Length: 243
Image (cartoon, rainbow, N blue to C red):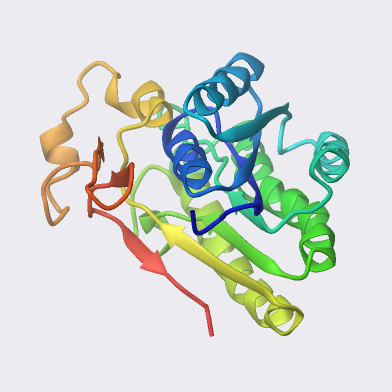
């Protein structure tokens, strides 16, 4: 119960890493605001957490839409009266459409930037005043191993995640003195619905070849842990700017 009575907003909280984080945070006592573009997934996540005794509220919203983000955080403030943490987890990986720069459709570039980078900016912009007003807290961004190593055929995704790492460093310096810690995590491939839809379930996808360079030779999958309810197997890199 390390997060008892803390209010945490999680974007992309309806599935994958975001849902696991929401369940874990709730199990530690947090009051969780689930921000998710897909309304049925958001409501299902809320119901799942409530069924286990946790507190969660679904806020269907598209993080790439600044008006929706602004309205969502106003609702969170009205509902909970405070905000202590933001987990900017929502992102998209368009494995079937992302390309090298010279072959990359402009609309694909714009869409990936809108969610992965603009979404992190919009949510941070409207969450930070609430966090500071609540006495401080933390912001976590989800970057990717693609942010620190070269990965072919996904230049738009790589660019956004590299930008998220840079944004994290800048925000850490800016908001540390204001009692807000800012960090990011950089997972490698995680077996989530997003990755399956964009890559893993594509005809001819060779998982063994794709993960040959990974230390464990495979993607990370959700497993049970003795210490906490969930964790992601150790194929991840962590980039910290905490001071």
